Length: 594
Image (cartoon, rainbow, N blue to C red; front, side, top):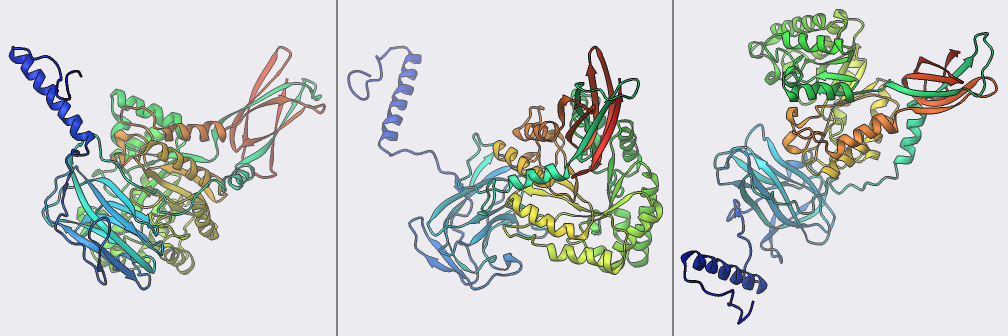
């Protein structure tokens, strides 16, 4: 740039050159203003501009970050949202609009709070629900999310502060509007996926020791010649072919039978990665209007030797019942539940290995509140009478909802349900299902807390299945790291018998937009998919080799499941199958005759 700050080049006489010169002058001016600090990107529209936060006991507060509020929490409230600061959103918003809740916060008592954006009426659907552990120093926070469509005053922002006694201060609260599909998406600021709960890897050594103890067993390969004499020095290779532990996924009907490249890829991936499945919707009561889709899926699973979980027989909320059943009450409802259970268990007999008999009875209870609490126990009795050989599970979604504590926030309620079913009613409950929908605004639960929680549920002496895992985390690295942490914790616990994802591909995943799937829509793997394959088919998969000793025996610890044992000596090779099912000090013996 010669001849002064505004000499951006020679002047030409034609119009195009004058237009180019004007653009270059504007660019130069922009650089000058930016350098002088006089220019910034346009601020997003604040949907809460002029709308004050209000809450019982809140007092105004002057801060370096604008007007604020202080609230003193004299004692914890139950539920925590009995004490909160709130503001209605006066503007209408459209579906998919990207908003960002931006604020400053501090707490001399290090209080946790929840930042919430939700529908301002029942069912209070939340698009944002982030837990923050405030520090004594002011800290900036911002959380971006997509909103459903709401009319003016149809949504609200809340800061839930009732969990812990102490003092909370907030300032500079804004609900920034970035429109639909902003490029780039506004970043989060100070997002802590664990909600301020300490977490590290000190738990892993003990977890890996438990894996070696409970997930592995001894295999002795005895090699003899044609005359039954021991063969020493024979080369032995043990290669695993199948896990005894069940690693599963939810199957979606549409991609499973789609005659498209995606459908073909979906089927191939299911068979490559999983040895267990649950039908996502087809076995729910009248989900597709008939049993035909479920029958077709069960047939496909049997053809491919995939054991199936049945989900679910009775979800005791009117909203989850077929339209023609919702209006029933009393004995009529009881008869309808009975007839449905007998019908579905009969149709699936021999093709389902475990049924979720009752689903989410803690939060879905209005049906048995009206028709009789013993209805949830009778559901187990009717299922057992119809198929005495199928396992019967109680399944719930609140067991790992810990919100930063060491116990689940609804543990007492789940305990009450299980005590009622097992101790009071002597219902034939044979398994416990833990859904495990993680993230999505709630803090991630660190492994030590998960294991501590599992220890409690293990006191029922029931096999535990992780039935509906997903982790709604958009950050790829964090998503993969948490899958590693969660799966390792689950696999290390002796009471857990299966781990089931609630879907794996973003093209057929109910939380794809929230980062719940481990494979992208275009079939490229996220880091979590690589974590899954490493754990299931490498770290926890046997591929061992060695030589027989003088007694003709080769001993090795292997992961429980099916294996191929290949023995080679000289030019002779022989392969035999071996199944190892005993852990700890158990030992399976296989003889190979050369």
